[in-house]
Image (cartoon, rainbow, N blue to C red; front, side, top):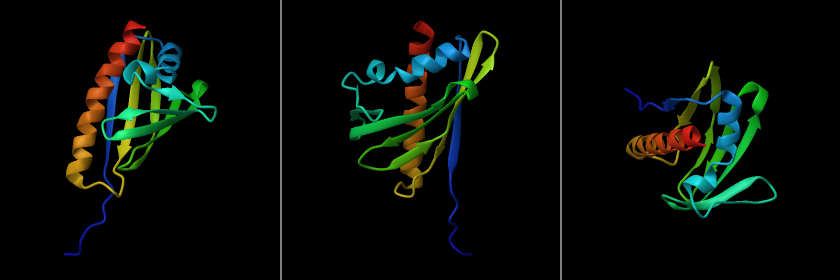
Amino acid sequence: MESEDVSRSRTLSITVKKKTGDAFDTILQIPPKMMPDAKINDNGWWSFTGPRGQSKLKFSENKSLGILDHKFVDKEAVWDVPMRIVSSGDFSEILITLNKPDELTDEQFNQRVDEVGEMFDRMKQIIESS
């Protein structure tokens, strides 16, 4: 059997007790609440110290469509992360899809998915308490 070149992805979701517009606005301002050294530059890139050192993040948002896609870059990999906020009355469902960067092994990818899951839980607490 030939070696498979299969792309891997995982979609994570959380439900927050916040209306979609409020959740959206909070997420755009969340980096300094999660990474104390986060600073935004004139080009819209947040820079901060992440789990693997110096990192940066930039949102490509469309509020009316609930799109909060972003690019995350650290010394290990570049991630293009689709993110959506879907309205459900007084609640919102926040979904992200993580596509495995070629630079990472399956084991590293699984570890990053777990780390992002923990970060997602912290994000939920921040959104609901804001």
